[in-house]
Image 1 (cartoon, helix red, strand yellow):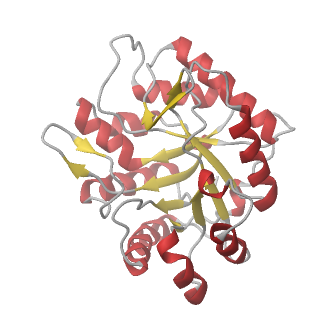
Image 2 (tube, one colour; image 1 turned 120 degrees about the vertical axis):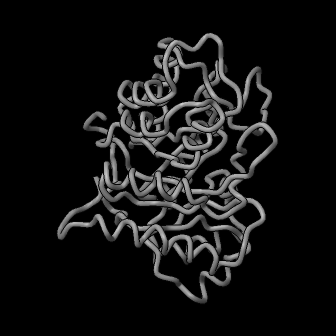
Length: 287
């Protein structure tokens, strides 16, 4: 990261937060539960006004904020979408979030959007390509962004690197942060038959700014990352080992489909907090 780029990652305590979703707007305002931070999908706030901003502006006063994007298509062969990027820059300037993140994937090609987070081939060429685009985004925003490892259901015959080597190489080449999704690499380990602990061991601890936890569904031939269930027991085990290795990190409970009552999300966040508390040292801050 160059000196001109700003990172406010240390402003979020290494505790648990939740994704802010519209069914919980009013209850969140009324209750103001104890949470380390809130995360929202950036694209849901690209409009200038309306209910999303009405509630977020009030909650932002009480909670650190993470903006999490799903549509920038960092890995695409298309030119970067400058209209999308300009909207993101406006949103960042409006809310001054502590964290800004995107997915290490592609979502569009030839100007057509797939509305899915598609994996990249794991090659040195792809490392250079996506890292260069991440640097462009960081230069435009004037701050560090995080990239998140994604779940996948197919692999490219052209890949010459492991997924974990690819993720680490991109983060190093781009000089960005890493949003480590534990559920995603567990899903991939099961789907593609690798050892998730080999993946975890390869992650650059000094770059991990945030962790995501979510639930999956079981299909006939694979696990499907649906964000519609509680965090599964083996993902909790892997998360405990990740925190033991990396140290405490801000941790988000993601739940995007079949959204449950707020208390269910808070209970999941409390589980993460109990794990984080066991690894906190006096005076230790998030890296």
